Length: 486
Image 1 (cartoon, rainbow, N blue to C red):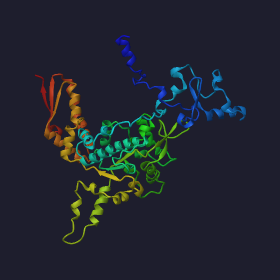
Image 2 (image 1 turned 120 degrees about the horizontal axis):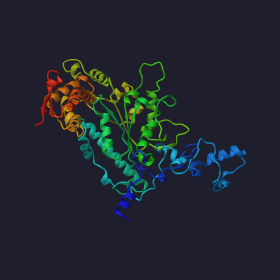
Image 3 (image 1 turned 90 degrees about the vertical axis):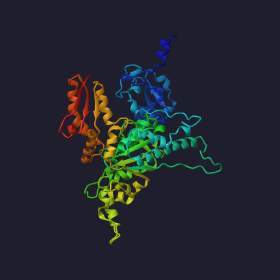
Image 4 (image 1 turned 180 degrees about the horizontal axis):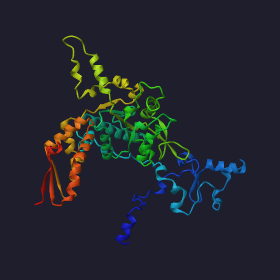
């Protein structure tokens, strides 16, 4: 066999969209009628055209035909190769891609449970230490040192929890001291509080790219009480299962980030049923604490045509984040009430301009905001993100690996034009972003506004070599400095 044939043999088979084809043997068979996977319904009966039916559905089909006098266990299905197809809205046209199993979307198929290995999936030394995780986050996220520390330690402990669980299943104990009882490590869910644009979602998304662990980002605003229009609570776990490639064992050791968690606070003044507030908090309790839930595979809602899979949330780390508007006022009122009278009293204006007022939040403040105590009890770790200062905003513009300025510089490099920002211009952009009060999101909005004319005019003249963005240009009292080639 020559090198060309070896190369073709090693190359994986690709789908029409360019993705690598999966082996059909890695996925469970799904009953065409009840849509249950093989792990729930038992062994499947494969009909002509690779249409799979479970024993229960096949027995019901025969019962409806012969009046219940046929015992399925005594039927020789090997003699049914010439059996005509039942009218199940399925007309096979051959084999291969036209089979019933191939017509089920891949996102609704369940991977088979992997055989247990002789040892754990990874060694303890392979777990990245908290300072290594934080150093990787520092390359992309500016500021918020405390939040990065908390998240790094939580992920580090999460990996160790996965390792300890795999060791426990092998009948061993990771404890160094012999004779002691085996210690079960519990997870510590995290509540992230910070103003809009402070980097809550960006921090978790960056963590998802850096770590090889299934992570799903869900939005609490779409969650409603069971039975109402909207996503059920199980859809949160369903997204994690999809992120893990429908591998239940891998998903059970993943991380879920629920954004906009403050939007499910109790409504104080309402005359209608609160189907997206306190009731959602109550339904989330079972997920946060740990329970076995039926999750639809490849869909956000349960129905008769969607296979279900049981997922244990005991070892899933939950991170909840929200802006919690008006929480600062609640904290200030509590602090002002504790002030005494007389010469030793604290000034009422002391807390008005305090940028770190959120760091003094307590469970009492969150309960007054509208979060129920049972929900807060399942989020023992609370971390706050402060407002971004002018100095931090300037760093965000130019220091991270994927900084906004670097993106524009790369865009103009494709036109062979050098883009330069003066330091005074960056300070003006940071000051303008603080006025808009939308955090780091305002930086891109400002740059999009002022870079529009530059990005439009530069490609007109191929002799332009460099462009310098100045503060007078941003203040609309001058223009950018343009230098020609040569």
